[in-house]
Image 1: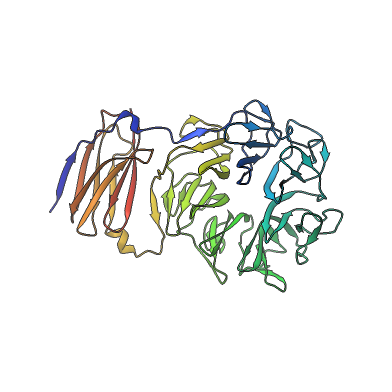
Image 2 (image 1 turned 180 degrees about the vertical axis):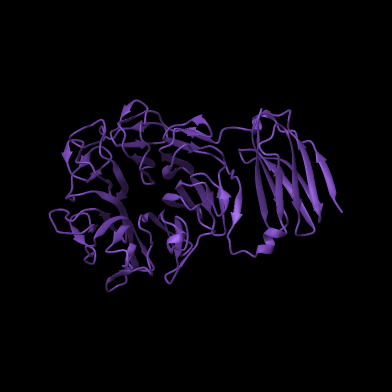
Length: 457
């Protein structure tokens, strides 16, 4: 038997608002790196730019919650102050902010590829001969990784440790045919480094390597593929997540992301679409954020940014015209940077902050959930986009289901409960209401299923 409800939902014009907002003007290239220093409550960004909001900030800028600053004018590459070589890593260690990259000087100090900032001025330190790609503090030491073969005059290959006074090598990291390192983590008391690492296509060392306490060794079969590359690693819920550019069809566990439990690789909720690239992973408040260039996560539409909670992926519903390359949280506000010029058709260039509250778009559960869960829970919303009239159909698994409607601020504007088991159809007319995005959640007693409807003029 069918139970049909016809609902007229009246949503005020104020219920729709923009969910992204520009966070600075004048950048001609998006930030490669964002870092929030919680000691002085300042966010730093680095990349290839010369100013922000009309302030000279060559390759480096800081945000104090109110204003952007240029850190003594920024970095220099000697040959050109308008188009500097990029800043690639920013991190606090003890009393300084350390900055790594491809530059040659900063604030009048000649300090190739690595320099530090004390809050007022730059200070040179023993530096490497080539690019620094990553910085990480582990067990009260600062680790630098990149594409160098000496640092501070010492022959050290790509991976070095700083105690505030001197550099030392890290377990004699080996020289490989391809050997530039982008990221490092300590997982289960073993060092893992990743990037573009290999001796040959048949070598089990493929783009990731670990130190097991005695020697540097492969991590299973590594991350395979002729053009494979790893950009980012994080530890999330006691597993090591890696992300970059790689494909499942090349023998990997997933597309662009997979996880390691110390024994074997596994897929992360279906991963991303085959042509995806993930530039950065970031853990915030028990959720894993991934940004880059992609369209789907776990089969759910998620353009260039997706959120994983350990069980399912969620998208934010926005569309970008280019990749997102960096992200950070400043006072719990999400800020992103990248190559984009528009978000959802609006002119928001290179850097943006999230103003959408707790809103998420569609979510999807991991692929190894019992298929019957999906067969018995079907949510349809059509037509979409709509000019005002559309239907919701939901076949409930349990004895009842409910519908809740949210605006883009995360505020509930409508709810109805106690659908009986069977086919439930809701006909909705919002033709009198403004264009925008409305979110419909259906709860079957076990799980929430979400859909977005776009209302055009």
